[in-house]
Image (cartoon, rainbow, N blue to C red; front, side, top):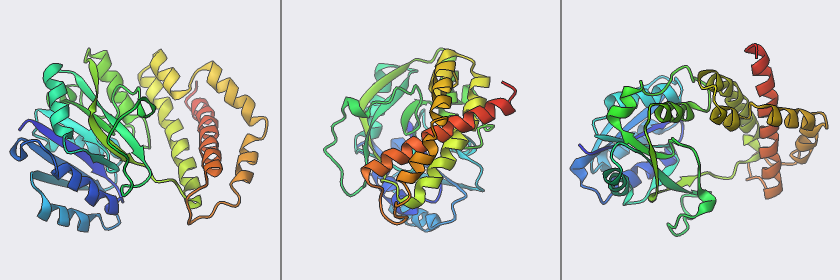
Length: 301
């Protein structure tokens, strides 16, 4: 078995069917790759979507079901069941192009043992996809970003997989990337291994979820820098004097109150307008830094 596509899902049944169909629709030999899906305790119609996918599968499909335990534990469950020489990680909001597996393996053949980082095009709807042409505006500098990345299965197992102490949202893949880099594993960016990353514009009802995720990400950021006290981690997380002092100064200007005022008329059922989306992202960002200071104090930093 040359490759495993590994993905985890949680309460995304409608899109999951499309994602799995895209994974089945590959130009690569069907008996040379597999799909390993981990359902991390979904409470929606995911079991139905999985049953439909089993009937439509054109390659080996393994489904692991577990109680909701977070992405790191779910990834490890997927790694444990994988058989491919190379494991390709995607998320459950990612639509791979038909040449996706083929391109990951082509890049891996050119750079044996390397991480292969693929390209991603962000879209708001799976029904309105632009031409599959990657450009620099979609570039991510993350060394190991599970939206679209592959590595030899033996290599990810050798470092112990994902750190399950990252139980809340965020940074578990960055931690893996830092450990792989520290162990000498090099990375190659290969944008031809391309996916569409479906990120619908949030509604007004999603604003508090955005805030909650930002706060959780701040708490896990502290865990990340404790494990990796390097300039890369301090810069990525914002845990450095320049960024912390800047955002502390912003909070003294009552920025949160002003941003919330801009969002007062956001409809819970309709996508945010562009100005509202900017305000919601700015609010989540400021509350990330507010939670970061609280988490750092609790950690004794």
